[in-house]
Image (cartoon, rainbow, N blue to C red):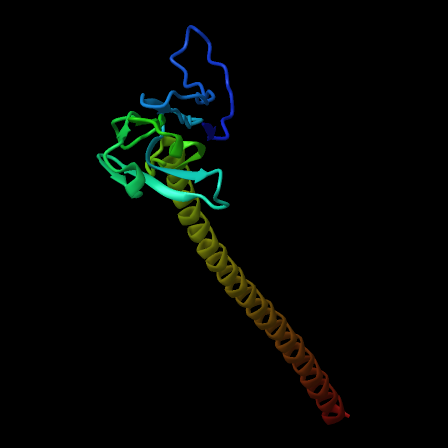
Amino acid sequence: MNTDVDPIQRKASPCDAGCAEVDSLTEAVAGEGFLLGCISCKKREEVSAWATVDWYFRSKEEDEFSHIFHYDHPTASILDEAFSERLQWRGTLDQDIQVGAVYIQNITFNDTGTYRCTFHRTLFLPRTHCGVTRYFVFSAKRGLVSVVAEIMMYVLIVVLQLWLIAVLVYCYKKIWNEHEDREAKKAQKAQEMKDNCTKVQTKD
């Protein structure tokens, strides 16, 4: 009997409670039981997950695999009548499955072939992680500061423009008043000179 679990062998330190992926057994005795091993370790144990396991079988006479077993904690489903009441779940008894082993009772020669196990795992990443929370709060503060700074910039530009217009008007009025004063003085001098000339002619 062959097993096609496609394992990735990894060594765990004896001091750590690590998860090691190992090959399944490949030889069985007719009439006895046989454990099909299948292990899929998570890379980050602190992340919670939900997983389902499916087992497939292909005999030597067939070209395609048939779906024989599905486990979605806590429900185990035998999907092939040939294995009815002969498959038992021996894997992780939790939704975060890492061991997907099944036990076949009463092995027969018809069970000879290739077995394949697949894991479908969904990771639940925390949405309120401190780093993410700090990032969003920091971004919100920066956005508010940016808006206020932009408003203040526009207000300052308007104030500067009004101040510049006021200065220009003041300068224009000052120059105009000085011009009028000069013209008035010129007119007054001209009038005085005219009056003086008139007085001289009268005396003669």
